Length: 257
Image (cartoon, rainbow, N blue to C red; front, side, top):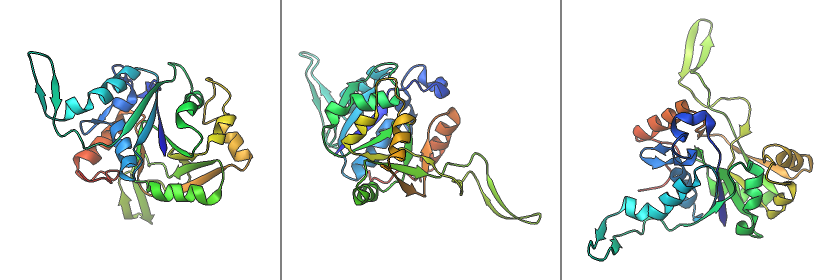
């Protein structure tokens, strides 16, 4: 099954980092957040990726092309320039890198991936959010209802610490937990090819008419994910993810090694 990842946006709210690289290449624990997302999918056996490129997409291309050289031992023959890569077998991934335009909106990027996704069910997410989501259960839920689209609904992280009060006494304190009310779009979609018919052109935002019309037609279902989810829209959120990773207990690190 193909996994489509949108990685072409400008990332303007993370300008401190994205002036020199696309947001999916911003690092958490020394690895691009894109790598973390792909590791989540690969943990469940989804290793066939199609990445929609746009802003500074050459950085992602270079990272994928040079991955073995950057992360493994090498022997370089300085006389003839031959390079031998040692033990580069840790990632059994196939990655298609597709230029989808600099200013193409999210819906347009998805539609431009149609020839590469084909006529089968596929997964879709953004290149800036991680979760401890059980993708096998997400897929099973999608297949159970027979609709065109499944969206993962999540509880947004609270911006401030949560207090449970009993009069003036604090009975419970939680530092920035997930909120307990309300659901938002956490991405991590499972989609049928029929969704491409809901996307008009490059100017279409996936989060607008396509999802609105899918919902109106009864073709959009919600898979409720109640545990960890965190996007990386701002520098503050990058620091949150870095702190999780540096603690040695990052909730989205569901893989071994």
